[in-house]
Image (cartoon, rainbow over all chains, first blue to last red; front, side, top):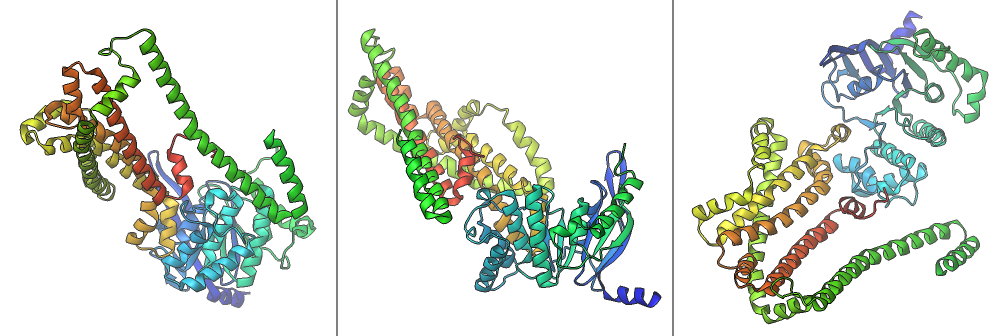
Length: 267
Length: 294
């Protein structure tokens, strides 16, 4: 057991150590994150699930090096993160597309920023768009696309440079249930093809269980880690799997934690 | 009637042809509708204007209004024809003042907005002064400019600039500031430097707002040039208006107003054209008054 833990720690790709984030507001200090520690292995799909305002988005921003922690540290491959990381692909809740660029142009922004070979990148962008069902929509502008399509473009933009680490902040939060299901399936396919390491923030229990190798359950503010749950469902996972007792058991575990913390209330 | 026929034919044809054709058909129909709306957008106001002019002409003849009070449109046209050489000459003078005043507004306004956006202490010092300075009625400053800069081209250009530069500053600064935090985060995660972030993301993001400012500015430039000519004119359409007024030549007065209006419309349209060339099509629609499909 002890030896195993050490081996797992050695494999750690991302390590979050005693992370705290305190915001100064008019009404005094607000503690958004409190003493968060966990690690993520290479190739692991790790989700954070928690109620709104538990600081999980803040956690992702800190993991991306976009926000500085108040105390504690983020290490990637052993090196401390002290500036915005560029070895990542990032997807926000909003697609954050540039209105004046086509779908392809938006994906290519990443390639241009990194000065990738244009021809190769364009070919890869085309393949990526195709693989998420946007073949033929390359020259459409964002306003000509549906919400789900826009988010797909933003996922392609986060993947075109084959990043080591994909960070997603409630990427499907603004979409309808059906589109969500499709995008969850698309994401699973994209990620398993590339053996990607994904840090995924969500408030959907089903989404977290479906996609993850491990789920980190957060408490309400100040966000602490409540429990980390291993999801040992076989891959690839199918929609039908959501109806199985095993899946329901995982959901139940998370639900029980939420009920125990008063995140959810059964009258 | 034809619409119904169209849609039946269309329905029949796409059932035969299948999905790809269906979408092409829908797009074709959308294009046709867009074309019809564009034509309607031109024809309706022209029709309205023509009707107003006809009523005016009829009223002037019917009630035989004295021409020094309200000349008939036909009389105005005759005056324009008779004075065409003068009108063109004075228009050239005024155009020069408008263009220079506008260009100066852009040349000063855009860098000023950039400095306000990029340099906080500068913004803290300049912005409140700039905003409160707009309470000064700029027309009232015109005589002062005459004292300082004489009767030539310069005071007119400066008055046009004084009136026209504020919208450029405000709209540019607002457009630059209206960048979502997430776009900056995105740029950082891509390793995009501040320079590239500005030119690839921030400036294009601000362009619709900047163009809205330019459109206001060009119309203000026309006002500024005329005010300058009113106060200390030796030429230009504003000066012509004063002369016509003094001679009770109301038909010429109207002719001058028409010339000024035409100038204003042409300049506004030129900025609109530039906007169309620079921005993708849908962004332009957002800044015009047209029906919004959003």
